Length: 609
Image 1 (cartoon, rainbow, N blue to C red):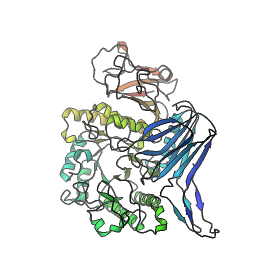
Image 2: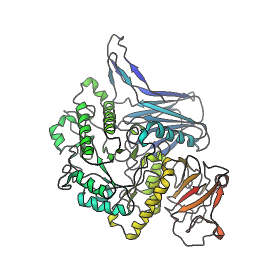
Image 3: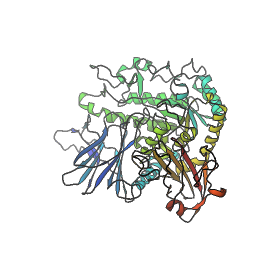
Image 4: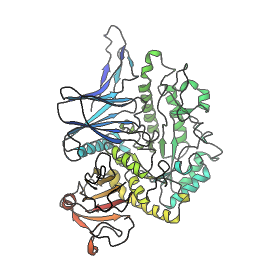
């Protein structure tokens, strides 16, 4: 890893030094056939993989929004030749920072490449006074001589074992249900308890009370900053509803957005100077809210006290920490004109201080970071928030693509992923429950729907799936993650084979640390090859000489008697009802026959040696 320390020794006659650009690391590479892998997107469409061959000139990846952003992720990979999973030299870069950032990738006229990574110099300056030191964020560089797979493995292990707090390294997040897509702002004590009782029947372990519980919060126009419960909705306070949820044997979590304030709030009325805003210009609102000035110590302390009061007043064991707009009007009324270029960075340092103090006071509370989904999904916050809400888009197809991109650098255990209702609230698409379950299984796992409205059959199915998640999660959350390239319908049409680029077929597996147990997931979003069988599925990471017993979970319903030994209803059996028991060498070298029945179909396999 690399970081930069700039110290003003005081020997310069002018005294203070204005620091205008400070990159964390610079990396030079000789001439080669260079390609770049990076992650782009937008709200509800984060971390889409982009691959390009470098041409002479400079590619600038970054954010000027005050957050690492939905649009780009502070991560990239430089590859020698086209990127491949298991072959080729690769260099991966990840910046541990949650604010404005920049990665410059320049191919010079000589064919050499230079990578710069650090704080975005746009709207940045720092008044470095005599004897003061400025420290840049850290950039991590990872090398692999065996393709992208080892880049992923190193980042996953590094962040899981060296960045996430030790108390969370073996975390299995409780199966939770969130009230947002069930009720939105229309929450109250009775509705939460009705949801909790129904969720308890299917094995849910935690209820998370999302937006709408505080102040006079019936929509997004008021009350942010006033972190006191609404007595009309919760006459017994948070302590009352937490007590009742706990009495069911369930845990309780809560949503907060402490960095924000509404114009219609007691906080803004009392402290209008606490927001980022130039007093001589029109105020810019996003989602009807303003951003608190976290560069100010008194604002940081107010947030710390507010969160402390909420968490200290009831047995709350989980916080979803949201942040629903970017920073604009980044002017602090506390700083002089000469230091306004420091606001963006001071904001992030203030945020990190808040998290350090709050998580220190409540070390048993799981914090999940969120910024309208994946708007601040970067490793900088993993030290305090062991998981992140990957995207506000809970559609299974969309999430598969998003989580595919995130998998390049982010451990599965960090990716918040839930089963939501159908038609989906973001895409209005309907996907079968099995596939929605598999996508959520490839993350922290939870529910984002009103289970009180589900049929008995659906509740029974969810009960079985929740129990299955509890059986498989030690492998999916803490095993090695592997992408399985090439599986699908090669040559049929663009995107019809699993690859690191845009694809309609996804094939992943998770392998336990001793390689004696594995979970394999396969998803097809779209197939235009109805009469064509997919290629054999070749697994990875197994013990060549070990014999593995295969079990297919929740097989897709279909008529019996499908020929050619394709997986079918009844489990993983070839002709004559023989259960599959194959060596690791065969599974990796020859592969498995797989059959998809329709768009949105999926397969879930468990292997045990």
